[in-house]
Amino acid sequence: MNVEYINPFIEASQNVIREMAGLHPTLGQIYIKDIPYKGDNVVVLIGLTGEIQGNVVIALKKTLACKIASNMMGGMPVPELDEIAKSAIAELCNMILGNTANIFYEKKVSIDITPPTVLTGENMQFSPSKSVVICVPLIFDNEENIDIDISYKEKSKVS
Image 1 (cartoon, rainbow, N blue to C red):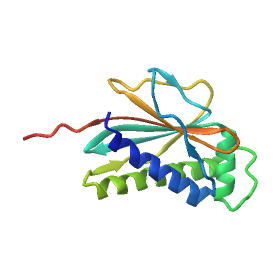
Image 2: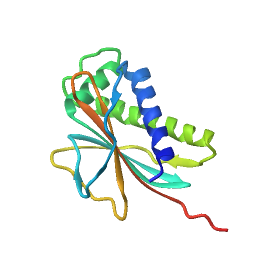
Image 3: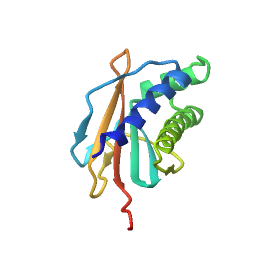
């Protein structure tokens, strides 16, 4: 696992969350997750294609998702994670990965992302095949967190 491939996710996620939701998460301890692993109540899946192939699972609790959606919508109360709130969370994650792709592009690494898929539910379990999952936890003031779970492989280069 190349740390140079993890740093763009950290930089982009902290910047986008700060700019779009007005929140300032701190970076928790990065670690490798055991597979299979469980996701929180709200999970956004985004695929990676190009020179780096894999997926990103962004997981958070509904309460934090509602707070972020509320902040993104100018403070409008968001008591439940309805379709508008889910759309806001999907767009936040899309912006995080879009900014990540731009950072990679500046480093001469070409990646594309798939549209986000939002899943909600209890006890979701993820089993990426033949992958190592790096968890980048972002911790908020109220001790809630977003886990950005990254699993990828570099595209093999043909000489």
